[in-house]
Length: 227
Image (tube, rainbow, N blue to C red; front, side, top):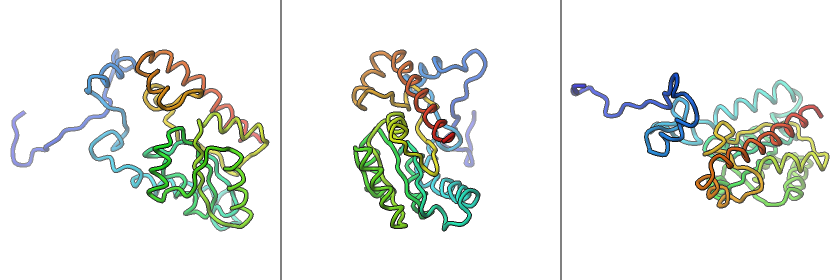
């Protein structure tokens, strides 16, 4: 189209697939060619501003949970929130919990993401041991102090491990990239490097492994809610 002085420099459309082309196979084929990207609203475009764009909403969500379920407390003080995912969106969770005076254990399979959250002061501690994470969280609750602990572990393994120990948090949630079983979610039983290699060599198997892990993941969260 003909341009003019007020013409936009960039036109952005995210994931606009319709009709016969609206499926993951076609999406991933276009993505591999650099012709499409996943994201809703600003999250998939040049306007993406990372974690700072989600911290307020996450804080307000947890503050409302505190008002509804723990009305006699100062925010989330004295409570433990268990969650997973410390990427661009999920990375806001530990800080949002401590801003509400609570304690957070957050699983993340990618240690680089954990280190980034620690460096940015969005998270306070990190460990690879589930028992250590539980001990740190319970000590903080006993002292009435806010604390965030990043647990370097697959989310499904963490939730299963907590249930095996009879540990039920006050709040359970999740912000892993479960909407994308190929490019976002990491299946259990693999390191990040092993999973990245499998994604390239056998994407169908990768998706199958991801879905199996997701099933465990969701089942454990639902069981925690029932308890």
